[in-house]
Length: 166
Image 1 (cartoon, rainbow, N blue to C red):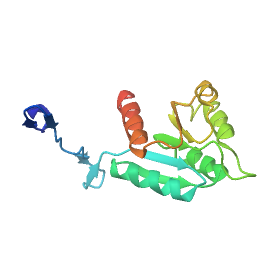
Image 2: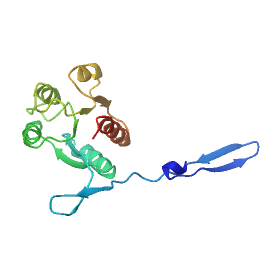
Image 3: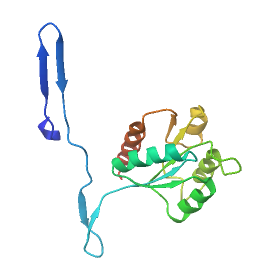
Image 4: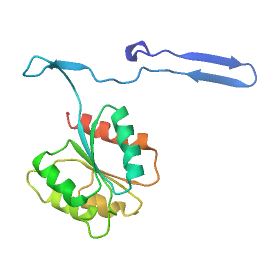
């Protein structure tokens, strides 16, 4: 375990079992050089959340920020789509059911995957609508049905970005 900076602790009670504790250090972002002004810069990824439930959006935002991501949040599908055209994020967390009269998640997913400039952005659907097959067929990288643990989203995003070489 020393290769990972952790250790193993065992507490055993004869006839009652054993408890193994393996604490590992939290992953933190490391300095990866200097920016063009000579200042230290941090390695990070930009994540856009498109979610109309502000309480859930805040929960997801802070979970992702705790995992080292920079997070922007949009309640409106139209405003989010305009922003991501001018400043594409590294990944998108997308609710399918957005405010009535708004561009819904299906429309955003179709537009993204139909765009030569934006179709490589991984999209993680986060919704109460259980239509995983439709979401994956439209190009979602993963499809999480609410409720789920927010840490599950962070892990899926990190794994995807690392496997994509980011």
